Length: 398
Image 1: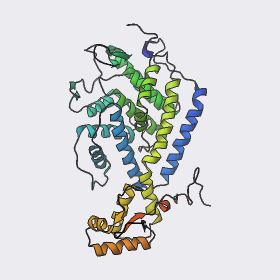
Image 2 (image 1 turned 90 degrees about the vertical axis):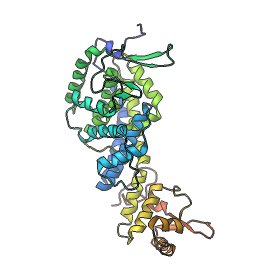
Image 3 (image 1 turned 120 degrees about the horizontal axis):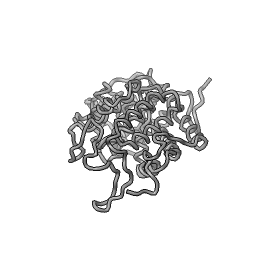
């Protein structure tokens, strides 16, 4: 088979990588700024809120890293699996069992919660077994918890109809995989604290994909390793942004830049630049992902001393979870009574009490049946930092 240029692993210098630090400097700086800003903001929150944020990010990561590969998991199954493993309240979450959902959640948690543990072949085999609990990928039986053996020919990444396939990449031969992975795992352990942690996570991702050591699941495990490397860099077992969520948005370019990099001579500058830009966008996206959690935190911090009963708290949480405009038709007497299992007369009194305490206000119109909403502009005032956030970062009140 001929190529315009050899694959990256056919280069005499393999697996030595190089990049242009001057090109990457700005992108790495932007990424570090976004990362630092987010982590500073999250440290302001209590443990319970951090756990809620962690769960939302974990759910998003599990769904999106699977979707990148064309596998759509049941969101309820993922949410249920996350709630069980993190010991979070599961009220209102349908009990949906799924081995595939459990598997991806399990490996993501192992990578981050146990990021200090050594990366070994056996650990990677365990992750692979969790991803393919039945021993099948779709309808095809695959070799699970072991390096691929190429029994059906070289490992190739292809697209297009049968008979007219386009080969995007051919991975190193199976007979050298043990040696390849020994080098990778050895580098993983030795490189910690010896190179920038974000660049290390991007390099690990590209290197693992280039080796392609498994019959299937290489992308998901590469992204899991990226999460693990970022946890090591941040020294946190909790993730507050989902890289896979942003990769899914840019999936076509993700595959293209990896393909171009894997046909080069070891220069991975383009890949690292793309990776840094993607990570910056992922952190910015996390602000949207976590906005619901943050709104709840702000609200309850503001009303920590407000006298409310459990029924009122339940209704408020439901409205916070729905978000601005998300509670269709507003909160009406009938909805409140049904939700809290009380009479309409009591519901009316409790709604009026919430209005008097500056929590709800009556929406305009509504005819004979009044409806209410939370005062969102008060909730979105950044009281965590002492004053409203306008354009740019909040400034603490001295």
